[in-house]
Length: 384
Image (cartoon, rainbow, N blue to C red):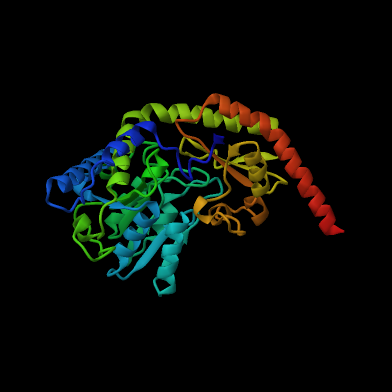
């Protein structure tokens, strides 16, 4: 299997797995006062420190969750529960942000959605134009999960906070792939997830700047300073801590190497296959992501053909897979529904090898040609 769907989930790093195996021998509950419980507590707190160092925060500002989706929900509902006022988001947000905010709108909350530019970038001035007096919460993702665009969260955060709004960023696709500094950027809230950075599934984190108060996410116990009750997932948290430590050590060297592979893939596709274009390639992007529009091709049909050849790619967000509707994030760029359905996402990691990229480039022209032929036949049959 050639795995190019790392924005959905990354392979577990062997070093992370080794540490998790060690942690699996600790049976205590991290809230227990006996020696075995305190072993578990040390695992939880050492991991918290590793994640805090990765993002430039303090350990006491890191709260554990089950993943990026829960972190986003914890930030959004916790921040606005007792703060009446406008909520502002970008039009490219992950479904977990869009749908959470939709619930707020259904309950009568004023919500303003600011679309990105057609090249995939986001104009901070347009976002800040929406941050009128009475705005209480702004959420703009750090890196788009579908086409990789980087958004100017630091610039937006500073001004949004000056105007009295809390600022949150979904940084799930950025943390561990590029340097992050919550303090320097002036963030109030940041979401991260272990399995996007070669850690385990089931572990996420929410950074909450010291002094920011959230309404309790899950009542019922004293865990996570009463923000999220329930026994900590010690094993997954240990893995998150290990993945964070490795990412901090490697991010500066990994990012350029991954970007070179991404560019090799993208350049090869555009040269070998007519009727293709890379989405958002003119705007700043995370180094691992390439979303390519293949004219005259159903993205799902091409995905299936590549899967049969042992290549894993994706269309749209993994959290929205199985839906027939085109991606709202792609539609927000001004694409037609047909164009949005023709986009395939290739997302790499530090484990991707040049031979794999070249193998995919060898397979793609025939796969795209066959998919286009099939689409043409289907169209002619439908016309008749």
